[in-house]
Image (cartoon, rainbow, N blue to C red; front, side, top):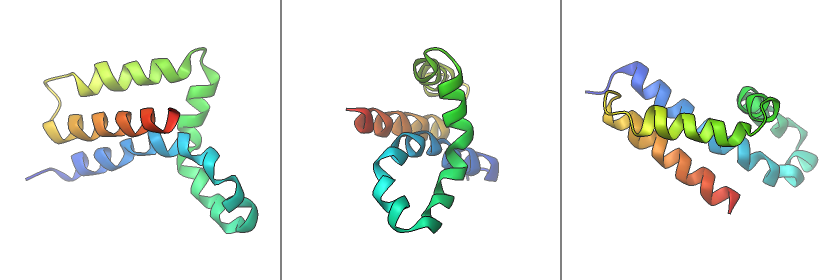
Length: 93
C-alpha cells in the first residue's frame, strides 16, 4: 500500500506542468475572475523558475536526475514525476 505522504507528493508534483499551463487560461481569467484562484498553488514554482537564471532547465534537471532516475525513491513517485515532466514538455512544444 502506498503511504499517505507519497500520495501527497505525487499529486503536488503535477503543479509543475500546471504552472506552465497557466498562460493558456488568459481568456478564462478575464471572463471569470474567480478562476484566478487557480493561480495560487503554482506561484512558488513560477517564482523559482523566474528568479534563477536557466530556472526551467535547473528545475527539469532536479526533477529528472534527482527524483525520476533515483532508484532509492519509491516507484510511484518516480513514475508520477516522469509523467509530470512529459506533460510539461508537451505543453512547451
